[in-house]
Length: 191
Image (tube, rainbow, N blue to C red; front, side, top):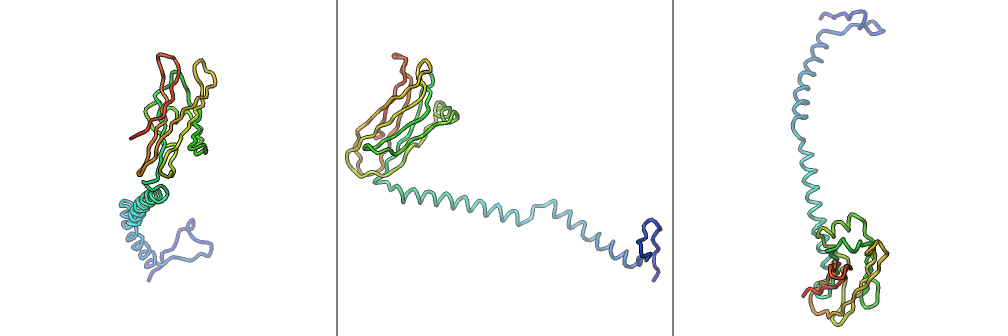
């Protein structure tokens, strides 16, 4: 076996030489590893696919758990839901809504400009979901914002309704009344 001397620039401090056979073996091992490394970089690893599949399964499970939670907390026979919609913008800029059912405050929501913009564009917000027993109830809503001439504006609307068996849906609507040049606040009972 012949040793290959290293050039003085590459010779280690100890002054030893590398065996030719060892050098060829190292080059052969490197040549075998390079194609496998290049192939692993070109194709996604199966672990990535498994992680993506697990993420998808977790999201599906989370959705199913949310639906079950809603059904347990708010069964259809006692459920009441209140929504907010807005067809305004000229005479009223919404800041907040306070909601009372049977004299008890159940929701108090402060709006961001982005949320108000979504409502003006036709969006509907679920303001409250809760449970009520069957019978007669009263809903009162207070709307706060900027009215005509940029003045502070607080108005209320109320509705007496009967809750029967099954879910009950109510909608708070804010609209412009062109004839009076004022905003109009109503509560719709979805039958």
